[in-house]
Length: 189
Image (cartoon, rainbow, N blue to C red):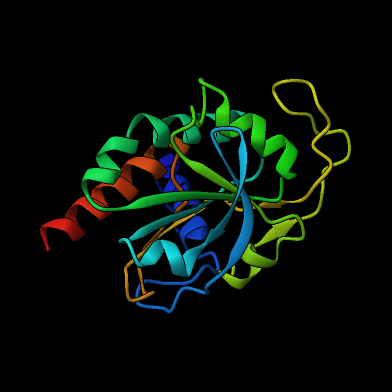
């Protein structure tokens, strides 16, 4: 019982993070991004013209949880598209690292775009906490990370620019699955 209460308290504290809440206006942004290893310019306003957008923030490419999350999003990319939604991952990674990550068949697999937010400005506009770089932190490929980390949080943004769901405090794969459930519900109306 005590363990369950501690777990519940931890979960509630994670969900009490300062992120934008459901119904809030999502800040528009434009950022350098990568899709299938090629640099592109991502504009939330342009993407919303085509349908809802899943904006997911993650700490760093090529790290344990982020690898799982990107893989789960890419495995389900066709289901997101069938629901009319597009996906953009956002981290403080460099565009060079994202070019590799976006094309890597184990993770983004050329199916989802990832944007570079090197100073955390986009993450902060979504009221996310950005932690400082952790000295000596390395990716799963052995490279030094060398940048700060945005908290893992996903926003489902409707075509009118409103946040339909804020997903945080869950495992990386659950984060992607909950985003898919949300866009599928939006499609059903």
